[in-house]
Length: 159
Image (cartoon, rainbow, N blue to C red; front, side):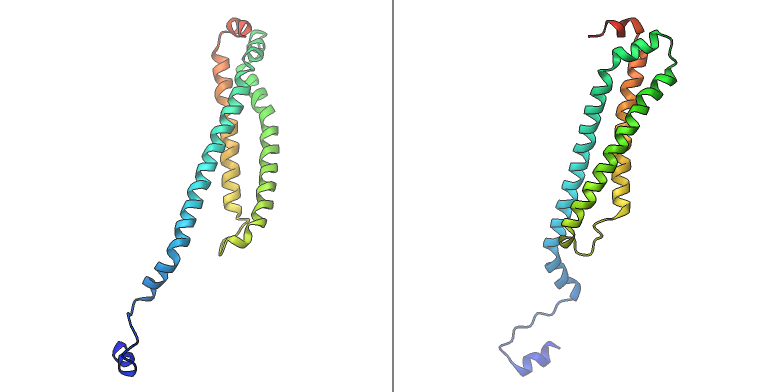
């Protein structure tokens, strides 16, 4: 092929490459951008999970005295855990619903930048919502279990 082109015009520069090599050169900046965006997305998800865990664990930890009073009055450990987790389920449901609605709205705004991707990907939305809900519930469960292990008299003297 190059011989035919050079026979027609010796001034034409020809450097044949495979189509995949040409595409790789042109797609590389987009791939780097997508990798960076995915990395920042995972970092944001990690920071959100750590932040949620910290805030929720702190608020449940502040209820150590209340949990101690319930135990001192004879409440069963399972009932106290159900009370702590039950209050959290409503907050988690509100947070997940509001967060998914906001994320869906924002994804519609940036849809034109997502070539070949579905901005309302249900798998991504579901996995992120489930992960953050699980982190939130674990953040309630762990400090509540710790508070149940505390002697009721020590919990009453807490603070």
